[in-house]
Length: 257
Image (tube, rainbow, N blue to C red; front, top):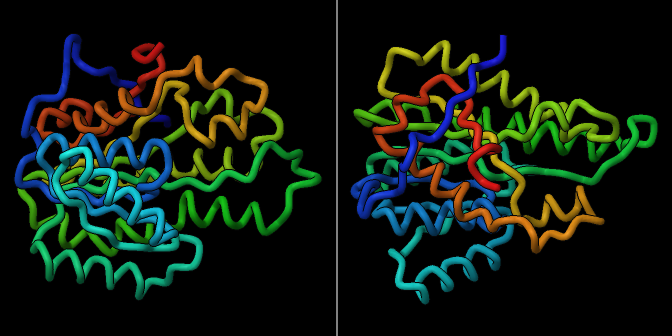
């Protein structure tokens, strides 16, 4: 059974320092949504660990955040396609050593190889989508669970995509993997619904990202909003106020026009 949908509270907006003293890990931090989340979380007072495949891109984001007057992020390169269980354990060990805590993970990384009929779908692209979009979030979350459990309030946020759209033709491994990610989030919630760790899913509205441009190459992407509004909604889930959306999918499709 699918999770119920939830909405942002009427009139909600991020408050200054709402994530003060929290440590938040953002995967896919150099992508459109990931970078927006990293900036928003830093602006809200969190210590942000930015993770992604390319170190140089992470360094560019680091420099940009400092130039914007944001708190210094922490760089942790991690190629989700190639990472092993030991790599995830090393990340968790590093967080334990450097901060002694972890208060949130935002799984913003995604692999999308384009719209393709299943008969023509390259097996490598299919396997990459399932690995990066499902297996990697599982392995990373599992490695970080002991650290997340030490916090008196922590959250894991999984970014989904429109299920009605992704069940149509040509969405291939990406569509299947996002459906699987949603089911994984539901199971994790069922196992953790009474503890300090909250499990959330997020359903963004259309936004101006490279993934969106790749999927809708004929669309005027400049007519879409930047990921900033979606990133602010992530702050709601990372904050204690997000307990109201625990065990649900926060649906932004009617919020961001």
